[in-house]
Image (cartoon, rainbow, N blue to C red):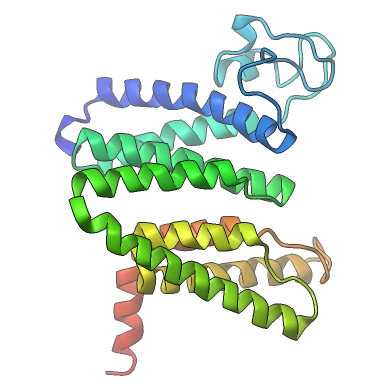
Amino acid sequence: MIDKLDYANISIIFIVGLLFGSFLNVVIYRIPKSISLIKPASNCPNCSENLKWYENIPLLSYIFLFGKCSHCKTNISIQYPLIELLTGLMLIGIAYYSIDILQFIVFSLLGMTLLCLIVIDFKNYILPDILIIISFVIVLFYFGYSEKLEALPRLYYAILAGSGMYVLRMVTTKIYKKETFGMGDIKLSVLIGFIIGYWDAFVAIFFGFVLAAVIFSILIITRLQKKDAYLPFGPYLIFGMIFYIMYGELVLRWYISLFI
């Protein structure tokens, strides 16, 4: 879609991304609390006052309201405009690399569900099953539609990836005498195995482990986190997958060149 990305299309994609980003904020806030995504209407989490339409314009409302609720003057989390902005930029990036409109739609939907999983896990230490299932259905549709029988071996890869993570969980839990990561991370590993394949998933998960270890070490050294604190692992699994998709081949080629 590179040749079709003129300024007009980029602007449209960005605006659509902002609108979807506003909805993602609803998903991120309500799903962990088991609140309907439809009712009640958008309201202030502090005073529960319903928002007027002009208080619910993505990105702009936050700026015009100076980051405060117009009713109770409570600060609005910076998360809201950041998610909206990030979603808009993400959709532009996906459009740039997509080969056709179907791939753009599928990868955009997948990217948005993964973004919700990242933020929810960071905030609530959970990976909602519904979002993992939605992601799985999106990818299953894409591979089943565009690559026909390619979806069948990918199911096998997914089971292998999940099984490997489950065994690793059992071993590390026994070694450290505490739960090292949750079942949500295993389900996410199944999804990653389905998306990129078993051996690729193994490397991507390894990247996730390394990234998590580096970040956790930095937080401990800077005393921003205690040694026994829980670290949400789901986001790092997703970051590891994204890093592998974008740079994995280059990293592996460089690593192999060290021994040849």
